[in-house]
Length: 164
Image (tube, rainbow, N blue to C red; front, side):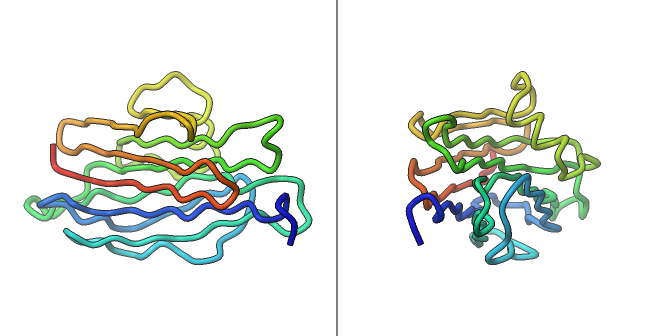
């Protein structure tokens, strides 16, 4: 497999919050495919990951968004959704590696609309940045999210969830 065929992104979610469980993961891929799936639940002090890769023979990278419901163990309900967006392109001469994180209303769908908002729109409810930039931090009323992504063809994106 040549360098241009090896685009992939491992997405790692770590739950360091005291009273939230990450539940009901959803994934939308603009391009690429699953190699492994996200864990269905991440309790306090747990982490989990999934690997996404470009489709063999396609001149596109692996690009998408992952969401989890933010389930409050005290109230026994999920009022918010957290999201992590990643873009590991096929052609580094034309595109950069991007990532983003945010907190959204619970009814937000994990689809191409959410991906487009996080990749291209004004940053409201989320932050985004390029791989060579600093670690991203997004603070909501209840949680703080941080994210970093490596700047390579086999990128790793980390998303950490903490109480604010």
